[in-house]
Image (cartoon, rainbow, N blue to C red; front, side, top):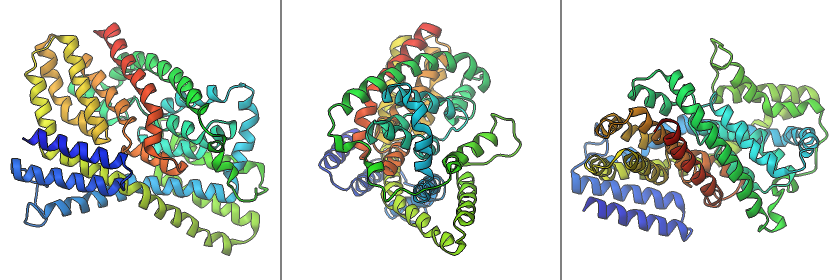
Length: 451
């Protein structure tokens, strides 16, 4: 009965979103319906410790908790990075970066080669910047204007940047750490001996597919879909050439003060953005000799943050709320039990476990939640079919990030779409084929190398 109710709610939610009902409202109502179903069918409390004294009123308390948690962490990062991007555009720094970068990049004679290689760069950076959303919005500040100026569409640039962290690689990744710990393996060894060989094959496949898919889909677009952000700008400002380096300051700060350099100082995305905004405003104030009006431009930053909250953060919260409903009504636990009792052989069992992660990640818009739910099962399931646990855990772990990149409600897709002003549903149409190819590459290379 629980499964029937869950499927019914999922179908209704999907139908309403396709029919262009307000996505946040639909997801919140769907999540509330699932949580209510969990209470009525399972007597499952919404919160571990009731906040209101009523199982039913705790639904609203949980929504409040989600808003507080997301707004204060991931939400703040998305808002401040978007605000930084807006300010860079306002002072002409983004345009300066574009003008500086276009000529050498155009020598490759193919905007789509640059587009595809941008994914490779992003995936490498993801080893040092494990936050998919944080990396995505940083690349939107630095790489997106370049790609659009070279002649690719906003959708193409957004889709590639949105998948830059589709493989959660390296010891800094929470999922990778969990996988190594579950397999009782050192995280660095897991990264070097297992992740890297599979990742090399997968990155090559995804890069090629990004090139093919986006070039083909862009050819079908109207020419007005290209360079829209550049062409709609106000009168171009004349600024010093060194302004081109202002948009990349946050990325430099994060990389310098990271495990990459062995620095004892650690600076996160939000801190790097505040530092960069401060430095940029000081430079702008000195250049214009107008500190009063420069300080007043903080309003541009705050307005941009508010706009991101209304359009992006609320959608992330709604997606998390819906995902919690799926968990509480018992869909996830039912999938786990059916998997344990399936009695399949080694390779089919890997496929089943990976498929469950993929479906859950797409529905929940998260790579962490499904993997955290299923990872503990892997050693026992692997042992039952005579597998090394890591051979089952790795495709599960990597597939979570890949599948997340196909979900229109996942944080990174929503965030980058919000910055570029395109629909996340249109973005995932472009990520679907590259991510499917990446998923197949992970499974096949895992079997070839370790299976």
